Image 1 (cartoon, helix red, strand yellow):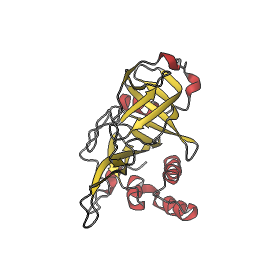
Image 2 (cartoon, one colour):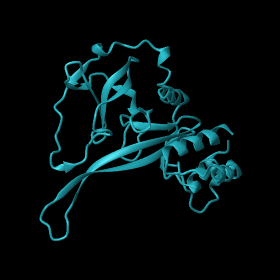
Image 3 (spheres, one colour):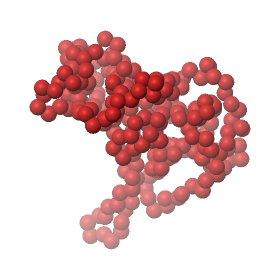
Image 4 (cartoon, one colour):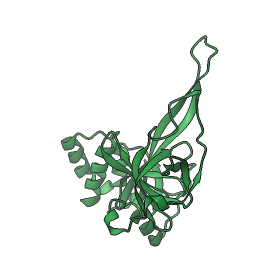
Length: 244
């Protein structure tokens, strides 16, 4: 696989990794191994009742339209903790604003996990599939190694998505009333050759990641008519480019 450095001759490279430090192979193996949450049959599941947590008081945003959560309702999911414990079929919510995962215990109380969570899955009710999230990735932008990223594709060139929410205020013309709304944005990041960086998933950017596969990329995009704003299509494209 050709390295991104082969494109140094370009006047303005689409992706520049020069500001990022290389990770050790041991660290990379640890991070990528956390992605395989679907192989739960390999592990002994700890009974849900034994999970330890700290009770929290949920903040109510009564004057804000929307929700700080990824899904504004409880969804079933799987969790892996730092010590290697695995829990399944837990009622979970992912607070995107705080970047925290919470669960509901058997008494109906809202709880933070007492032990750090390194990976989790949430059942996506719209697509009936599980979305996978991990932390432990290198710091980038204003995120640190405790920040959770959704795994779109895992491989030699891995693709992640980071969902953000913040409260924005607006006023209608001539009105004294301030409207507050949760605004959701998404960013995409790649992990390649030990470097972690933010990208915009365009054809030009993807070609910079796979410079020796321009012909295959063009033919595949023309044949499949992919939407590069669609996560499922991005996953298929990265699967294809990583294996050829």
